[in-house]
Image (cartoon, rainbow, N blue to C red; front, side):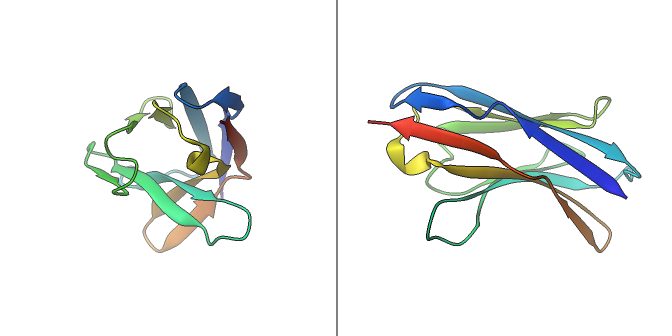
Length: 115
C-alpha cells in the first residue's frame, strides 16, 4: 500500500509562482514513475508532468516552458515548480505514483490562479 500527500496549492495571481510537493510513503519500489495530473471543473483529468526514478521527465506541451518537475528519491517526494501561472492553470492537482502494474493517487491540492 502506498499513500500520497500533496501540499502547496494556493490562490495566486496570474504571473505568479507556486511549488507543489507530494510525499509518498508505504511500500514504494525502487523503480517507479511519479507525476502530476490536474483536473479543472467540467474537464477530464490530464497529465501535467511525470518523472522516473532516474530523472527522465515528460511534460504536457502547454506547461513545458513554465513548469519544472523534480524529485528527491531519498525523501520519496516529487515537486512541481510552477512559474508564470495563468488562469487556465486553475485546477485540482493530483500526485500519482506508478510502480509495476499499480497506480496510486493522492487526494489533490487546489491551485487557483486569478486574473
